[in-house]
Image (cartoon, rainbow, N blue to C red; front, side, top):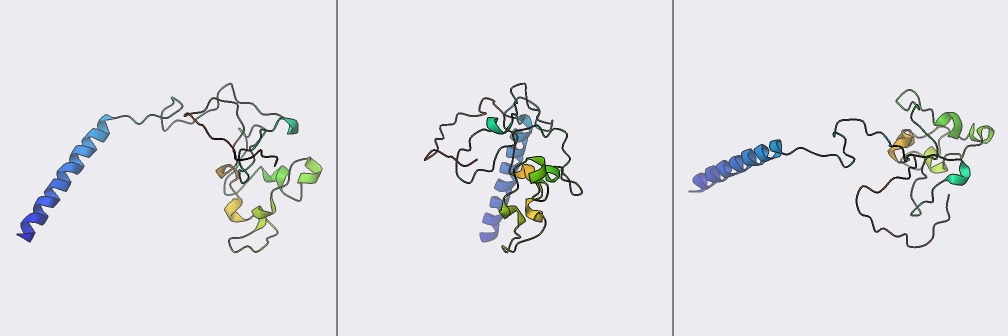
Length: 150
């Protein structure tokens, strides 16, 4: 009896999986910005970047700063990170760029490093170019208090 129940359950799960797979194959996955899901998502004409005075305000205390300039031609891969040519602590002063936070020079155990931590190497994991574009979905987020951190 137990063996018959398990066989019936396995057949039911298999049939449900087949039906689910067939339904999923009929539906196209749509990107939110009307481009194919596997196509590069280019910023439209509303993209803007401005100087230091034009930086967009952060919405919450721990929000990574937005990038106020184009990074379209920046190389960021395992060999090169062009962000560091201006923002590394050794060069930021002479380039007039903001320095990286000291947290970017800490390893996973909190030890201070002389170079950028590997966990913080790919800047655009957290930092994105600022853009004045309409939201993808309705958003009613309100910061809990005015944010003055830049």
